[in-house]
Image 1 (cartoon, rainbow, N blue to C red):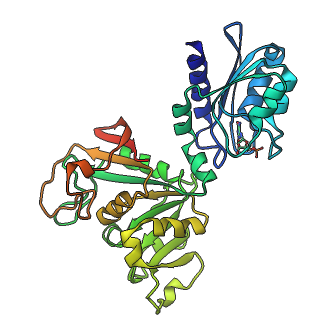
Image 2: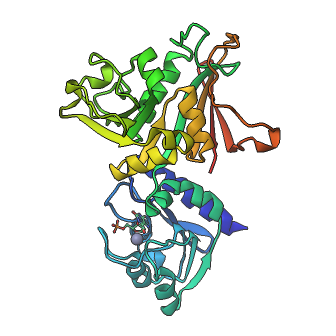
Image 3: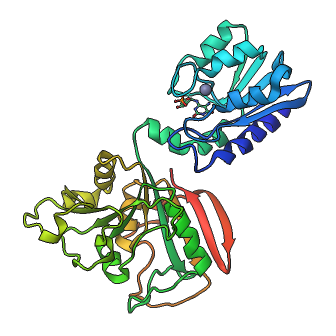
Length: 355
Ligand code: AOF
Ligand code: ZN
């Protein structure tokens, strides 16, 4: 059916806005007349024209009597931009096909129908929902949580002597630095902070650095640690029972966030909620084993980025990528959906979704 084909083109156009539209949705649109595409548009950047308007501009007079395919229900209210419904009605569009209804702007469908425009909802709905997962989470006011981990082919993140530099190739590590720019915060646990002493930055002047978050329940990280270098803010999650705060932590750029660590260990969502209260909406967890296990088995994670290097190191005490106790039975395993594989140098990057 041609409808799917046109919606797929709209979906591909939407992806062009990737990394520039947050916290707005990625949206793409095509206008079709007599089986020919006469207009293409997408949402280029936050605050910019909506996809529908860009497609209508591209189609000009050809929009009259045409069909419009858009990945999200057209908006019907004044925000940063005027309502797309007005532009669609004015241009004389005959039918509107949209993939996903938009709970943010009720009434788009109704106003179009009242103006005798035929509406079809749901073409490639699943794919379009995946495309705007960050936006849908944003509407629900829940942060998006991803895990990044670098491991050997036998699933280890360090040797039995805790050596981990380096597991993956330089190219994979550069990929991770860039990934960080798409998150508001990068989070690690105390062991990783101590063993690796990482900067957790994007290593680039042109990319935005996320806030750094470390779970240091007893406030034991030394003053000289890279996370206290003051160039980017660092949030320290620590146990609310700790009363004496080291002097060097009482300064600008350090955000002290107490939580009940016992509860947080059982349910990682305690930490996610705490970060949400600091307006942190996109979190990249970078280890180690226990934090990864806790986040995964608390059902707090949306997607994973597992980098696998072609190396085997063995060792029953060498750290596995996912620690914790693990599940008892195979039937209790976490299921990863929509798995994709990318090759970076000699490493594999496995991307998958959990929710
Ligand atoms: C977009 N791009 O292509 C479409 C959107 O503040 P505004 O005026 O930009 O409105 C943002 C809302 O408009 C957004 O949350 C969504 O409900 C709707 N549609 N938004 O940024 C688009 N079609
Ligand atoms: Zn709009």
